[in-house]
Length: 544
Image (cartoon, rainbow, N blue to C red):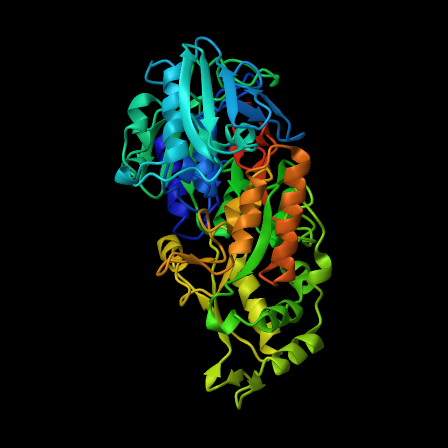
Protein backbone atom coordinates (compact mmCIF):
# COMPACT_ATOMS: atom_id res chain seq x y z
CA UNK A 1 0.00 0.00 0.00
CA UNK A 2 2.78 2.42 0.94
CA UNK A 3 4.69 1.83 -2.31
CA UNK A 4 1.56 2.26 -4.39
CA UNK A 5 0.71 5.50 -2.56
CA UNK A 6 4.23 6.89 -3.00
CA UNK A 7 4.17 6.08 -6.70
CA UNK A 8 0.78 7.75 -7.04
CA UNK A 9 1.93 10.96 -5.34
CA UNK A 10 5.14 10.90 -7.36
CA UNK A 11 3.11 10.70 -10.55
CA UNK A 12 1.24 13.83 -9.51
CA UNK A 13 4.46 15.79 -9.85
CA UNK A 14 4.24 15.30 -13.61
CA UNK A 15 0.49 15.48 -14.23
CA UNK A 16 -2.51 17.39 -12.96
CA UNK A 17 -4.17 16.30 -9.73
CA UNK A 18 -7.06 13.90 -10.06
CA UNK A 19 -8.40 13.58 -6.57
CA UNK A 20 -11.93 12.34 -7.19
CA UNK A 21 -12.69 9.26 -5.18
CA UNK A 22 -9.39 9.35 -3.28
CA UNK A 23 -9.26 8.58 0.38
CA UNK A 24 -8.63 11.48 2.76
CA UNK A 25 -6.73 9.37 5.25
CA UNK A 26 -3.57 11.35 4.49
CA UNK A 27 -0.03 10.18 4.13
CA UNK A 28 0.15 7.83 7.11
CA UNK A 29 -1.44 5.06 9.07
CA UNK A 30 -0.73 6.69 12.41
CA UNK A 31 -3.16 6.87 15.27
CA UNK A 32 -3.37 8.72 18.55
CA UNK A 33 -0.39 6.76 19.88
CA UNK A 34 1.90 7.87 17.05
CA UNK A 35 3.59 5.79 14.39
CA UNK A 36 2.91 5.99 10.69
CA UNK A 37 4.93 7.50 7.86
CA UNK A 38 4.79 11.20 7.08
CA UNK A 39 4.62 12.29 3.44
CA UNK A 40 6.55 15.49 2.74
CA UNK A 41 6.47 17.31 -0.61
CA UNK A 42 9.49 19.27 -1.85
CA UNK A 43 9.51 21.59 -4.90
CA UNK A 44 13.03 20.49 -5.91
CA UNK A 45 15.25 17.47 -5.46
CA UNK A 46 18.39 17.41 -3.35
CA UNK A 47 21.79 17.48 -5.09
CA UNK A 48 24.35 16.74 -2.35
CA UNK A 49 24.46 15.40 1.19
CA UNK A 50 27.96 16.74 1.90
CA UNK A 51 27.14 19.01 4.85
CA UNK A 52 29.33 22.05 3.99
CA UNK A 53 27.57 22.21 0.60
CA UNK A 54 24.14 21.51 2.06
CA UNK A 55 22.78 25.06 2.14
CA UNK A 56 20.29 24.43 -0.70
CA UNK A 57 17.01 23.86 1.15
CA UNK A 58 16.24 20.43 -0.33
CA UNK A 59 19.70 19.28 0.84
CA UNK A 60 19.28 20.76 4.30
CA UNK A 61 15.82 19.26 4.66
CA UNK A 62 17.39 15.80 4.45
CA UNK A 63 20.57 16.52 6.41
CA UNK A 64 18.55 17.96 9.28
CA UNK A 65 16.90 14.55 9.80
CA UNK A 66 19.92 12.25 9.47
CA UNK A 67 22.69 14.18 11.25
CA UNK A 68 23.28 15.56 14.73
CA UNK A 69 25.43 18.55 15.63
CA UNK A 70 27.70 19.41 18.51
CA UNK A 71 25.38 22.22 19.62
CA UNK A 72 21.69 22.97 19.14
CA UNK A 73 20.44 26.43 18.17
CA UNK A 74 17.05 26.96 19.72
CA UNK A 75 14.85 28.13 16.80
CA UNK A 76 12.75 30.38 19.04
CA UNK A 77 15.46 32.12 21.06
CA UNK A 78 18.44 31.49 18.71
CA UNK A 79 20.43 30.65 21.84
CA UNK A 80 22.99 27.83 21.62
CA UNK A 81 22.44 24.76 23.78
CA UNK A 82 24.20 21.40 24.35
CA UNK A 83 23.50 18.51 22.00
CA UNK A 84 26.25 16.02 21.14
CA UNK A 85 28.51 18.23 23.24
CA UNK A 86 27.24 17.81 26.78
CA UNK A 87 27.85 21.49 27.55
CA UNK A 88 28.73 24.71 25.78
CA UNK A 89 32.40 24.91 24.75
CA UNK A 90 35.23 26.45 26.69
CA UNK A 91 36.55 29.33 24.56
CA UNK A 92 39.71 31.34 25.11
CA UNK A 93 39.69 35.15 25.25
CA UNK A 94 40.38 35.79 21.57
CA UNK A 95 38.16 32.96 20.26
CA UNK A 96 41.05 31.01 18.71
CA UNK A 97 40.61 27.84 20.82
CA UNK A 98 37.41 25.88 21.50
CA UNK A 99 37.15 22.80 23.73
CA UNK A 100 34.12 20.49 23.66
CA UNK A 101 33.21 17.56 25.90
CA UNK A 102 31.15 14.91 24.10
CA UNK A 103 28.18 12.90 25.35
CA UNK A 104 28.80 9.24 26.05
CA UNK A 105 27.24 6.42 24.07
CA UNK A 106 26.42 8.20 20.82
CA UNK A 107 26.75 5.99 17.75
CA UNK A 108 26.23 6.26 14.03
CA UNK A 109 23.62 4.17 12.29
CA UNK A 110 26.37 1.80 11.10
CA UNK A 111 27.23 1.10 14.75
CA UNK A 112 30.51 3.04 14.84
CA UNK A 113 31.10 5.44 17.74
CA UNK A 114 30.77 9.20 17.59
CA UNK A 115 33.92 9.91 19.57
CA UNK A 116 36.61 12.58 19.75
CA UNK A 117 38.66 11.09 16.92
CA UNK A 118 35.63 11.05 14.65
CA UNK A 119 34.64 14.63 15.53
CA UNK A 120 38.12 15.87 14.70
CA UNK A 121 37.97 14.03 11.37
CA UNK A 122 34.67 15.75 10.60
CA UNK A 123 35.92 19.25 11.27
CA UNK A 124 39.34 18.80 9.72
CA UNK A 125 37.43 18.05 6.51
CA UNK A 126 34.72 20.69 6.93
CA UNK A 127 37.22 23.37 8.00
CA UNK A 128 39.84 22.69 5.33
CA UNK A 129 38.01 20.91 2.53
CA UNK A 130 39.75 18.48 0.19
CA UNK A 131 40.42 19.69 -3.33
CA UNK A 132 41.51 16.23 -4.49
CA UNK A 133 37.99 14.95 -3.76
CA UNK A 134 36.31 18.23 -4.83
CA UNK A 135 34.99 18.73 -1.27
CA UNK A 136 34.59 22.38 -0.33
CA UNK A 137 35.37 24.22 2.88
CA UNK A 138 32.29 25.04 4.96
CA UNK A 139 31.26 28.68 4.53
CA UNK A 140 30.19 28.58 8.19
CA UNK A 141 33.74 27.90 9.47
CA UNK A 142 36.37 30.63 9.37
CA UNK A 143 40.13 30.65 10.09
CA UNK A 144 40.25 26.92 10.86
CA UNK A 145 43.67 25.45 11.69
CA UNK A 146 43.22 21.97 13.16
CA UNK A 147 41.43 19.74 15.62
CA UNK A 148 43.05 17.79 18.43
CA UNK A 149 41.91 14.71 20.36
CA UNK A 150 42.43 15.45 24.06
CA UNK A 151 40.86 12.18 25.17
CA UNK A 152 38.05 9.89 23.99
CA UNK A 153 35.37 12.42 24.88
CA UNK A 154 37.22 15.74 24.58
CA UNK A 155 38.16 17.66 21.44
CA UNK A 156 39.95 20.95 21.01
CA UNK A 157 39.92 23.13 17.92
CA UNK A 158 42.52 25.74 16.98
CA UNK A 159 42.15 28.74 14.65
CA UNK A 160 44.67 30.96 12.91
CA UNK A 161 42.69 34.09 13.85
CA UNK A 162 39.62 34.77 16.00
CA UNK A 163 36.70 32.64 14.89
CA UNK A 164 33.78 33.96 16.96
CA UNK A 165 31.15 32.26 14.80
CA UNK A 166 32.44 28.73 15.32
CA UNK A 167 30.09 27.85 18.18
CA UNK A 168 27.08 28.73 16.03
CA UNK A 169 28.68 27.05 13.02
CA UNK A 170 28.77 23.68 14.78
CA UNK A 171 24.99 23.92 15.30
CA UNK A 172 24.16 24.17 11.58
CA UNK A 173 23.44 21.43 9.05
CA UNK A 174 26.71 22.47 7.38
CA UNK A 175 28.37 20.80 10.39
CA UNK A 176 26.19 17.69 10.46
CA UNK A 177 28.33 14.89 11.88
CA UNK A 178 29.11 11.87 9.68
CA UNK A 179 30.67 8.45 10.21
CA UNK A 180 34.34 7.89 9.40
CA UNK A 181 33.54 5.82 6.31
CA UNK A 182 31.16 8.50 4.99
CA UNK A 183 33.83 11.18 5.45
CA UNK A 184 36.11 9.23 3.08
CA UNK A 185 33.73 9.67 0.15
CA UNK A 186 34.30 11.92 -2.88
CA UNK A 187 32.07 14.83 -3.84
CA UNK A 188 30.34 12.68 -6.46
CA UNK A 189 29.75 9.94 -3.89
CA UNK A 190 27.77 12.43 -1.78
CA UNK A 191 25.44 13.03 -4.72
CA UNK A 192 22.23 11.47 -6.05
CA UNK A 193 22.26 7.70 -6.25
CA UNK A 194 24.30 7.39 -3.05
CA UNK A 195 21.86 8.61 -0.44
CA UNK A 196 21.52 5.32 1.46
CA UNK A 197 25.31 5.24 1.91
CA UNK A 198 25.43 8.54 3.82
CA UNK A 199 25.66 7.59 7.49
CA UNK A 200 24.86 10.04 10.28
CA UNK A 201 23.94 9.70 13.93
CA UNK A 202 20.56 11.42 13.57
CA UNK A 203 17.08 10.16 14.42
CA UNK A 204 16.37 8.99 10.86
CA UNK A 205 18.31 6.93 8.31
CA UNK A 206 17.89 6.87 4.53
CA UNK A 207 16.64 3.49 3.40
CA UNK A 208 15.49 4.06 -0.19
CA UNK A 209 16.03 6.50 -3.05
CA UNK A 210 14.63 7.08 -6.50
CA UNK A 211 16.93 9.60 -8.13
CA UNK A 212 15.27 12.95 -8.63
CA UNK A 213 11.84 11.93 -7.35
CA UNK A 214 11.73 10.15 -3.98
CA UNK A 215 13.69 9.61 -0.78
CA UNK A 216 12.50 7.46 2.12
CA UNK A 217 13.70 7.83 5.70
CA UNK A 218 13.18 5.31 8.47
CA UNK A 219 13.19 6.14 12.17
CA UNK A 220 16.18 4.90 14.12
CA UNK A 221 14.81 2.87 17.02
CA UNK A 222 17.92 3.16 19.21
CA UNK A 223 18.22 6.94 18.91
CA UNK A 224 18.60 8.46 22.39
CA UNK A 225 20.64 11.68 22.22
CA UNK A 226 18.32 14.49 21.21
CA UNK A 227 19.07 17.98 22.52
CA UNK A 228 18.30 17.81 26.27
CA UNK A 229 16.04 20.87 26.07
CA UNK A 230 13.52 19.07 23.84
CA UNK A 231 10.46 17.71 25.57
CA UNK A 232 10.57 14.48 23.57
CA UNK A 233 13.51 12.14 24.06
CA UNK A 234 14.35 8.75 22.57
CA UNK A 235 13.37 7.38 19.17
CA UNK A 236 11.16 9.40 16.79
CA UNK A 237 7.44 8.94 17.29
CA UNK A 238 6.76 8.31 13.61
CA UNK A 239 8.04 5.36 11.58
CA UNK A 240 9.58 7.43 8.83
CA UNK A 241 9.33 10.22 6.27
CA UNK A 242 8.75 9.96 2.52
CA UNK A 243 10.25 12.92 0.63
CA UNK A 244 8.44 13.35 -2.69
CA UNK A 245 9.52 15.87 -5.33
CA UNK A 246 6.51 17.81 -6.61
CA UNK A 247 7.69 20.74 -8.67
CA UNK A 248 4.27 22.18 -9.45
CA UNK A 249 2.91 24.36 -6.65
CA UNK A 250 -0.65 23.34 -7.53
CA UNK A 251 0.31 19.71 -6.95
CA UNK A 252 1.83 20.40 -3.54
CA UNK A 253 -1.10 22.52 -2.43
CA UNK A 254 -3.77 20.20 -3.80
CA UNK A 255 -2.19 17.03 -2.47
CA UNK A 256 -2.02 18.36 1.10
CA UNK A 257 -5.39 20.12 1.12
CA UNK A 258 -7.04 16.93 -0.16
CA UNK A 259 -5.42 14.86 2.59
CA UNK A 260 -3.14 12.81 0.33
CA UNK A 261 0.08 14.19 1.82
CA UNK A 262 0.95 15.61 5.21
CA UNK A 263 3.34 18.55 4.68
CA UNK A 264 4.49 20.60 1.70
CA UNK A 265 7.19 23.25 1.49
CA UNK A 266 6.98 26.50 -0.48
CA UNK A 267 3.28 27.29 -0.48
CA UNK A 268 2.79 30.24 -2.87
CA UNK A 269 1.37 33.39 -1.31
CA UNK A 270 -1.87 33.25 -3.38
CA UNK A 271 -2.56 29.76 -2.01
CA UNK A 272 -1.97 30.56 1.67
CA UNK A 273 -5.67 31.24 2.25
CA UNK A 274 -6.52 27.61 1.47
CA UNK A 275 -4.70 26.58 4.64
CA UNK A 276 -7.04 28.64 6.80
CA UNK A 277 -9.64 25.88 6.33
CA UNK A 278 -10.44 23.39 9.09
CA UNK A 279 -7.94 20.58 9.29
CA UNK A 280 -5.13 22.58 7.72
CA UNK A 281 -2.37 24.86 9.00
CA UNK A 282 0.25 27.24 7.61
CA UNK A 283 3.74 27.69 9.08
CA UNK A 284 5.84 30.66 7.88
CA UNK A 285 9.29 30.19 9.40
CA UNK A 286 11.84 33.00 9.44
CA UNK A 287 15.17 32.38 7.73
CA UNK A 288 17.03 34.94 9.92
CA UNK A 289 19.62 35.94 7.35
CA UNK A 290 20.25 37.78 4.08
CA UNK A 291 16.95 38.91 2.65
CA UNK A 292 15.51 38.02 -0.72
CA UNK A 293 17.42 40.58 -2.77
CA UNK A 294 19.06 41.63 -6.00
CA UNK A 295 22.85 41.83 -6.27
CA UNK A 296 24.08 44.29 -8.92
CA UNK A 297 27.33 42.91 -10.28
CA UNK A 298 29.20 46.17 -10.42
CA UNK A 299 32.22 44.84 -12.33
CA UNK A 300 30.13 44.50 -15.48
CA UNK A 301 30.58 47.49 -17.84
CA UNK A 302 26.86 48.29 -17.75
CA UNK A 303 26.87 48.51 -13.94
CA UNK A 304 30.25 50.09 -13.19
CA UNK A 305 28.74 53.58 -12.89
CA UNK A 306 27.16 53.93 -9.45
CA UNK A 307 24.53 56.22 -10.95
CA UNK A 308 23.22 53.33 -13.04
CA UNK A 309 22.96 51.12 -9.97
CA UNK A 310 21.26 53.90 -8.01
CA UNK A 311 18.84 54.38 -10.89
CA UNK A 312 17.91 50.70 -10.89
CA UNK A 313 17.18 50.90 -7.16
CA UNK A 314 15.11 54.06 -7.56
CA UNK A 315 13.26 52.56 -10.52
CA UNK A 316 12.09 49.37 -8.77
CA UNK A 317 8.90 49.60 -6.73
CA UNK A 318 9.44 47.03 -3.97
CA UNK A 319 6.10 47.72 -2.33
CA UNK A 320 4.28 46.91 -5.57
CA UNK A 321 6.23 43.63 -5.78
CA UNK A 322 5.29 42.60 -2.24
CA UNK A 323 1.67 43.80 -2.47
CA UNK A 324 1.09 42.19 -5.88
CA UNK A 325 2.86 38.87 -5.52
CA UNK A 326 3.14 38.08 -1.82
CA UNK A 327 1.36 38.16 1.54
CA UNK A 328 1.86 39.30 5.11
CA UNK A 329 4.27 36.37 5.50
CA UNK A 330 6.77 38.41 3.43
CA UNK A 331 7.60 41.71 5.20
CA UNK A 332 9.15 44.47 3.07
CA UNK A 333 12.90 44.48 3.66
CA UNK A 334 14.42 47.43 5.51
CA UNK A 335 18.01 46.30 4.96
CA UNK A 336 20.01 43.51 3.42
CA UNK A 337 19.49 41.48 6.62
CA UNK A 338 16.17 40.45 8.14
CA UNK A 339 15.16 42.32 11.27
CA UNK A 340 15.59 39.08 13.23
CA UNK A 341 19.11 38.51 11.89
CA UNK A 342 22.15 39.07 14.06
CA UNK A 343 23.88 42.29 13.04
CA UNK A 344 20.81 43.88 11.42
CA UNK A 345 20.77 47.61 10.72
CA UNK A 346 18.15 49.69 8.91
CA UNK A 347 19.36 51.03 5.54
CA UNK A 348 15.90 51.57 4.03
CA UNK A 349 16.70 55.22 3.23
CA UNK A 350 18.89 53.88 0.40
CA UNK A 351 16.02 52.01 -1.24
CA UNK A 352 13.38 54.66 -1.90
CA UNK A 353 11.26 54.25 -5.03
CA UNK A 354 11.61 57.42 -7.11
CA UNK A 355 11.30 56.87 -10.90
CA UNK A 356 11.86 60.55 -11.66
CA UNK A 357 15.21 60.45 -9.86
CA UNK A 358 16.01 57.17 -11.65
CA UNK A 359 15.54 58.83 -15.05
CA UNK A 360 17.61 61.84 -13.97
CA UNK A 361 20.47 59.57 -12.85
CA UNK A 362 20.46 57.70 -16.15
CA UNK A 363 20.45 60.98 -18.06
CA UNK A 364 23.45 62.17 -16.05
CA UNK A 365 25.24 58.88 -16.73
CA UNK A 366 24.81 59.44 -20.47
CA UNK A 367 22.12 56.86 -21.19
CA UNK A 368 19.59 58.36 -23.61
CA UNK A 369 16.27 56.75 -24.69
CA UNK A 370 16.53 54.93 -28.01
CA UNK A 371 13.92 54.56 -30.74
CA UNK A 372 12.45 51.50 -29.00
CA UNK A 373 12.43 53.19 -25.58
CA UNK A 374 15.47 51.33 -24.28
CA UNK A 375 18.30 53.64 -23.32
CA UNK A 376 21.52 53.62 -25.31
CA UNK A 377 25.06 54.88 -24.89
CA UNK A 378 27.90 54.65 -27.41
CA UNK A 379 25.79 52.29 -29.53
CA UNK A 380 25.10 49.85 -26.67
CA UNK A 381 21.68 49.22 -25.16
CA UNK A 382 21.11 49.18 -21.40
CA UNK A 383 19.77 45.63 -21.18
CA UNK A 384 20.51 43.50 -18.11
CA UNK A 385 20.00 39.78 -17.53
CA UNK A 386 18.53 38.50 -14.27
CA UNK A 387 18.64 34.85 -13.18
CA UNK A 388 15.52 32.90 -12.30
CA UNK A 389 16.14 31.95 -8.67
CA UNK A 390 14.42 28.57 -8.63
CA UNK A 391 14.67 28.06 -4.83
CA UNK A 392 13.17 31.50 -4.18
CA UNK A 393 9.40 32.06 -4.18
CA UNK A 394 7.87 33.41 -7.39
CA UNK A 395 11.25 34.54 -8.77
CA UNK A 396 10.05 34.51 -12.38
CA UNK A 397 7.05 36.67 -11.49
CA UNK A 398 9.27 39.02 -9.47
CA UNK A 399 11.64 39.54 -12.40
CA UNK A 400 8.73 39.93 -14.83
CA UNK A 401 7.25 42.71 -12.70
CA UNK A 402 10.67 44.37 -12.40
CA UNK A 403 10.95 44.12 -16.18
CA UNK A 404 7.77 46.21 -16.47
CA UNK A 405 8.92 48.73 -13.86
CA UNK A 406 12.40 49.25 -15.31
CA UNK A 407 10.98 49.38 -18.82
CA UNK A 408 9.25 52.61 -17.79
CA UNK A 409 12.63 54.27 -17.22
CA UNK A 410 14.22 52.80 -20.33
CA UNK A 411 16.09 49.80 -18.90
CA UNK A 412 15.69 46.43 -20.61
CA UNK A 413 15.47 43.26 -18.53
CA UNK A 414 15.95 39.70 -19.76
CA UNK A 415 15.37 36.55 -17.71
CA UNK A 416 17.85 33.68 -17.81
CA UNK A 417 15.68 30.58 -17.57
CA UNK A 418 16.78 26.98 -17.09
CA UNK A 419 16.96 24.17 -14.55
CA UNK A 420 19.05 24.30 -11.39
CA UNK A 421 22.18 22.97 -13.09
CA UNK A 422 21.96 25.69 -15.73
CA UNK A 423 21.33 28.33 -13.10
CA UNK A 424 24.30 27.16 -11.02
CA UNK A 425 26.62 27.41 -14.02
CA UNK A 426 25.30 30.79 -15.16
CA UNK A 427 25.58 32.23 -11.65
CA UNK A 428 29.36 32.40 -11.97
CA UNK A 429 29.40 34.14 -15.39
CA UNK A 430 29.44 37.93 -15.29
CA UNK A 431 28.59 38.17 -18.98
CA UNK A 432 25.59 35.88 -18.48
CA UNK A 433 24.03 37.18 -15.24
CA UNK A 434 24.41 40.85 -14.32
CA UNK A 435 21.71 41.01 -11.63
CA UNK A 436 21.61 38.06 -9.26
CA UNK A 437 18.39 37.19 -7.40
CA UNK A 438 19.04 35.18 -4.22
CA UNK A 439 18.96 34.94 -0.42
CA UNK A 440 20.85 33.10 2.35
CA UNK A 441 19.59 31.93 5.72
CA UNK A 442 21.89 31.56 8.72
CA UNK A 443 21.28 32.74 12.27
CA UNK A 444 24.73 34.23 12.83
CA UNK A 445 26.61 37.45 12.11
CA UNK A 446 28.63 35.58 9.46
CA UNK A 447 25.64 35.18 7.14
CA UNK A 448 26.40 38.40 5.28
CA UNK A 449 29.98 37.23 4.76
CA UNK A 450 28.68 33.92 3.44
CA UNK A 451 26.65 35.72 0.80
CA UNK A 452 29.04 38.40 -0.43
CA UNK A 453 32.66 37.49 0.39
CA UNK A 454 34.69 36.52 -2.67
CA UNK A 455 35.80 33.24 -1.07
CA UNK A 456 32.23 32.22 -0.20
CA UNK A 457 29.11 32.59 -2.35
CA UNK A 458 30.51 35.71 -4.03
CA UNK A 459 27.02 36.90 -5.02
CA UNK A 460 28.40 40.15 -6.45
CA UNK A 461 31.21 38.38 -8.35
CA UNK A 462 33.65 40.69 -6.60
CA UNK A 463 36.50 38.33 -7.50
CA UNK A 464 37.71 38.36 -11.11
CA UNK A 465 38.45 34.68 -11.94
CA UNK A 466 40.70 35.65 -14.85
CA UNK A 467 43.08 37.81 -12.81
CA UNK A 468 42.21 36.58 -9.31
CA UNK A 469 41.90 40.24 -8.30
CA UNK A 470 39.18 41.91 -6.27
CA UNK A 471 37.07 44.65 -7.76
CA UNK A 472 36.33 46.06 -4.28
CA UNK A 473 38.96 45.01 -1.75
CA UNK A 474 37.33 47.16 0.94
CA UNK A 475 34.14 45.10 0.77
CA UNK A 476 36.00 41.83 1.29
CA UNK A 477 37.94 43.34 4.20
CA UNK A 478 34.75 44.55 5.90
CA UNK A 479 33.13 41.15 5.49
CA UNK A 480 36.20 39.29 6.77
CA UNK A 481 36.22 41.52 9.84
CA UNK A 482 32.82 40.19 10.92
CA UNK A 483 34.24 36.67 11.13
CA UNK A 484 37.54 37.67 12.74
CA UNK A 485 36.79 39.84 15.78
CA UNK A 486 36.14 38.05 19.08
CA UNK A 487 33.34 39.97 20.81
CA UNK A 488 29.65 40.33 20.01
CA UNK A 489 29.91 44.12 20.16
CA UNK A 490 32.77 44.15 17.64
CA UNK A 491 30.92 41.77 15.33
CA UNK A 492 27.82 43.94 15.46
CA UNK A 493 29.86 47.00 14.52
CA UNK A 494 31.62 45.14 11.71
CA UNK A 495 28.33 43.86 10.33
CA UNK A 496 26.79 47.34 10.34
CA UNK A 497 29.84 48.70 8.51
CA UNK A 498 29.56 46.03 5.81
CA UNK A 499 25.81 46.60 5.40
CA UNK A 500 26.33 50.35 5.09
CA UNK A 501 29.00 49.85 2.45
CA UNK A 502 26.69 47.61 0.40
CA UNK A 503 23.96 50.24 0.66
CA UNK A 504 26.13 53.30 -0.02
CA UNK A 505 27.68 51.69 -3.10
CA UNK A 506 24.25 50.63 -4.42
CA UNK A 507 25.43 47.04 -4.70
CA UNK A 508 22.19 45.45 -3.51
CA UNK A 509 18.44 45.96 -3.42
CA UNK A 510 16.72 44.01 -0.60
CA UNK A 511 13.17 43.06 -1.59
CA UNK A 512 11.51 41.24 1.30
CA UNK A 513 12.21 39.04 4.29
CA UNK A 514 11.86 35.55 2.88
CA UNK A 515 10.22 32.87 5.04
CA UNK A 516 9.96 29.16 4.43
CA UNK A 517 6.22 28.58 4.12
CA UNK A 518 4.86 25.12 4.87
CA UNK A 519 1.31 23.87 4.48
CA UNK A 520 0.28 20.93 6.63
CA UNK A 521 -2.61 18.87 7.82
CA UNK A 522 -3.65 19.60 11.41
CA UNK A 523 -3.17 15.90 12.19
CA UNK A 524 0.57 16.62 11.99
CA UNK A 525 1.52 17.63 15.53
CA UNK A 526 4.94 18.70 16.75
CA UNK A 527 6.18 19.98 13.39
CA UNK A 528 8.98 22.48 13.84
CA UNK A 529 11.76 24.07 11.84
CA UNK A 530 15.37 24.70 12.79
CA UNK A 531 16.76 28.22 13.13
CA UNK A 532 16.52 29.13 9.42
CA UNK A 533 13.37 27.29 8.44
CA UNK A 534 14.43 23.76 7.49
CA UNK A 535 11.91 21.11 8.58
CA UNK A 536 12.46 19.02 11.70
CA UNK A 537 10.46 15.79 11.94
CA UNK A 538 11.96 14.31 15.11
CA UNK A 539 9.13 15.45 17.41
CA UNK A 540 6.27 14.93 14.95
CA UNK A 541 3.31 12.72 15.75
CA UNK A 542 0.52 11.81 13.34
CA UNK A 543 -3.05 11.76 14.64
CA UNK A 544 -6.15 10.33 13.00
